[in-house]
Length: 176
Image (cartoon, rainbow, N blue to C red):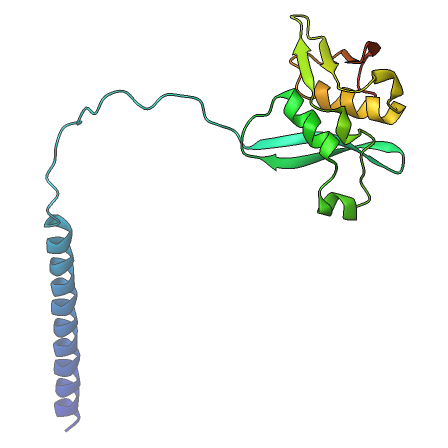
């Protein structure tokens, strides 16, 4: 009886191993057929011309110098395009955004100072022309104009002269 029981157990184990081996073999064959029969044909390199060329447009930020607690404070705003110095100075004269005002930022540049004109000579010296007398601006307003214009200059530190109604202040560099 014991021999019969041992034979049955051995036969059952052998049967189980064979079934397992067949299952593993079947799964392997199905996987091989699936990978080999994906339908992609080998080919040579396909020429499509030159790669694209051009400049990558970086993310634009606009830097303005506003006033907080009687001191200059650089503020960056998101921008969707490069701005000319005169456009940046117009933003400066328009004053801070609501969010900037909530942070205690102001401007000393009066709105009537615009429209602005900014010109540069080859040495990097900028001349900012206002619509109001330059000598009547506060010292902080002149610093705001000088620093905001200097951000756009190709040379650092930039020399900026503020001119308006026959009066001139500068040349100056941004103190910050």
